[in-house]
Amino acid sequence: MADPSIAATVLAAAEDDERTAQEVQKAEELGAVTAEIVKDDEKKEEQETTVEEAGKEEEQMSAAELKLGPKLFLSSIELFSYLYDLLHGWVVNTDLNKYEFLVVSELLKEGAPHKVGAGISAIQVRMHPSWKSRCYYLIRSDGSVDDFSYRKCVEKLLPLPKSLFLPNGELDLDKVVPGAKGKNRDKENGSFDGAAKGRGGRGGWAGRGFQGVRGGRGGRGGHGKGGRWT
Image (cartoon, rainbow, N blue to C red; front, side, top):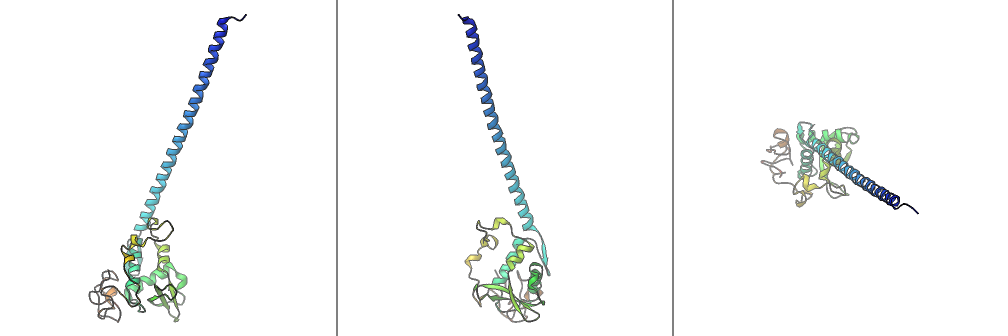
């Protein structure tokens, strides 16, 4: 007959082993949870770092400087806004004046050199026959004519921050040019206040360029007296 004390000792030892195993299992489970928490924290830190770096990169891209002809642009937004307002404010089928020509021709040479061809004689704003909207056109020295995208040039030379684009990849124009969608700027013979009034033409070169010009008395179709596009 087995000694009761031995059986009790064996039973106690078994219970101790079971408790130890349970404690080890709990410790392992706790360790796994802790490890998962640490991984989550590391992922969050990486994501925050990535977002922060992306934000800094966008700020740097947006704040970069670019000189085109006589004009210095301090950001991609300033460059885009200038070209957008010029496109939608200039009188169609009329050569850009000297100041704007120097700016836009330099943009074209640097942003889309394959379009230059025989050389740029003049640049106009015309209604695109297919898209039924305003578009920049270059007139080459050999008389040939071609349209070009100022947006593609901007994207190559001084890209806009990604935060200005919609999820589908389209540019949120109101973020770049506030109120642009609410203005009817595509009438074939339309223009902003002051455009094509008087005898303007020298305004950009003699004054301050397209934005903030004081108007001159040059050739037909330029900025009139006091003509400022808003």
